[in-house]
Length: 69
Ligand SMILES: [Zn+2]
Image (cartoon, rainbow, N blue to C red; front, side, top):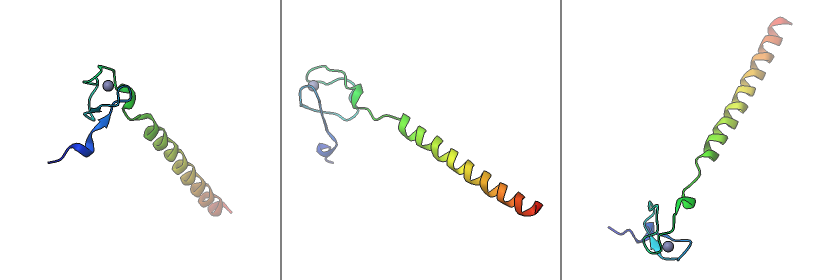
């Protein structure tokens, strides 16, 4: 079992730290800034949902238009 590839590097002291570490064990600096943002995927899903809703609405309008005339 090798964990060498999963190690991160502290941006403050450049020492190897565990990926899930909140504080650097070498210099004690907070490492919250390294965590990945979760807001981007949420924004993208909302954006895609809007596109799908628009497509469905357009298809529905075309369908109704063809039925009426
Ligand atoms: Zn450090």
